[in-house]
Image 1 (tube, rainbow, N blue to C red):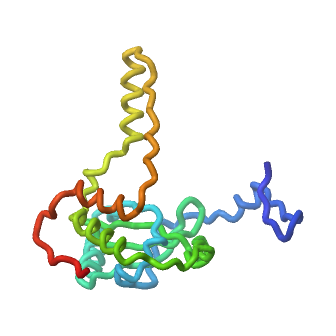
Image 2: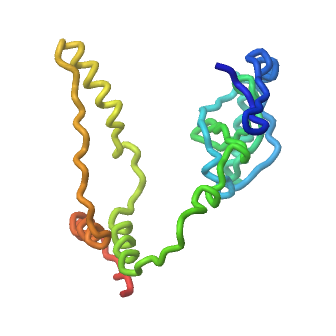
Image 3: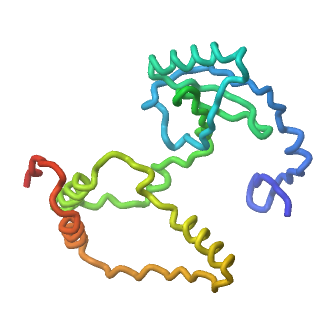
Length: 208
């Protein structure tokens, strides 16, 4: 197995492991902030991995707190670059509690454009009645985001598997979900609305 770059069909430039190793940058442990933006101006598709960031000892704590307070008051994110894992990464810095949340970003060249991905989709006419039903369903199920309400079922199954093995029991068999029957979309939306019941508070009825 080798790595390479395809110049044209059946013509490659082979890249050896040593070639890539020589390109790795040495970390300076410094984040150079070069630009500041509003949180709404950052495309969510660019967000990669978040990290907690704190001051490097008591000496830097005051400067750390000053920058955090200034960003918080102005409601800005700091953008910069830092070497991580031998590669220079684009990062954003935002205040979080008494520290910062440092999030590594993808470079725009790493993203595929949505227009290209969906270019084969047709421009079909959208039924107004189905849209109104969908809007009602969305409104009924709208509320504050609570991450604790969502359970990682795979992680739960792994824990149950470990517990069963410790007790000498048979492995847990996870049964596949039954395939749902294909329904008319309007019928399916109406059934979903019926299951949710009345909304928790009064809302103006959608126009017919």
